[in-house]
Amino acid sequence: MKKNKDMVEFYPKGKGFDLRLDKYECYKKATGKCSLDIIDDYSVFKESGNRNDISYCPYYCNLIRKNGYKPDLEPVSISRDLCNHYSVDNGRHRICIMAHENKPMYIHITYSDSECCICTKLSPISRYAKLYGKRRLLFSYLRYYISNKHKKITYL
Image (cartoon, rainbow, N blue to C red; front, side, top):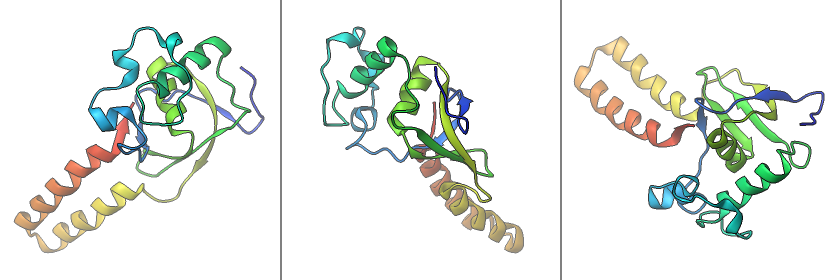
């Protein structure tokens, strides 16, 4: 695997990402099942322009298996936030595919001096609860934000 001098080797498996994929961009978000998990033979698919189509990820996974991962074509860019989550700027589907394949990739990574947007929403609530001790308010907000946090932070 050829890499640029400013790219680093990165294993996406097991890390938390703010992928911001919705049902229009991801088959799993649309149906609840990942197309890479339900299909055995990826080679039968042709390229699909629709990102939430069942053939989109298997087609690109098959290309990566055949030709190897090519980081120089269109580099993946992510930033690591203070909360240890990763915000993806470019290459959301490729990160997901490489995590599914459990293989490394070369990426551009920057380090942020703030938390991700999901943890930032959670922080003011916990500060408010420490100051004022409003347990009922805290638990209702925490229940709401934590339930949304796990929907948006994707652990691959």
